[in-house]
Amino acid sequence: MREYLAAYPSRYFNITDAGKNLPKFLKGHRYSRVFPSLSRLAEMEWLILESFFAEDCAPWNNEIPRTQFSRLRFVLDTSVRLQRKSRLIYRKGGSVKVEKISPSQWELLEQLARGKTLESAIGSIDTLSAPQVNRWFRRWVSQGVFQEIVG
Image 1: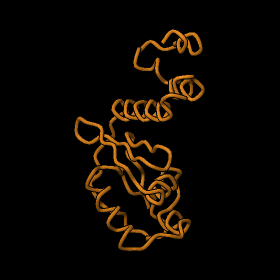
Image 2: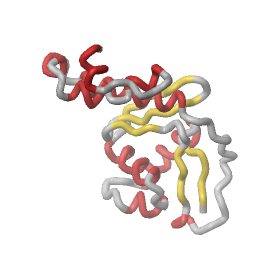
Image 3: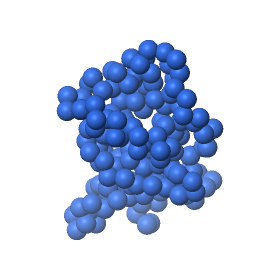
Image 4: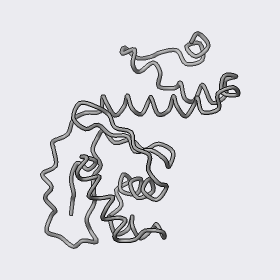
């Protein structure tokens, strides 16, 4: 811990924020030679903390705007974090959920997070089928992954 604080002295009032750079620090640390996934674990823990403390947003009323489907933008909830093409992290109720997701799911959510329309995001991923995307969206909507849909 002393090595980490020497390399990344805390500039934060809240002790929770002191670990922000721990994943980066652990990538080059000797412990990572013994425990290769240590940096990734620290990154996931940091994302869980960010998700838990993310600002609350008004719940989505599940209404879809009357617009052309191609122009819809799905806005992710403020608690959503995506980790290295493998995990979806979000807050539901009072707890944080961590789900293993496929690279295609991650890519779709990443595209939506960058503000792409649904049509554009789906079109940029070759391996998607309509039934597959429908299943994902039913789950994500039921879990509160989206804050709103904008037309």
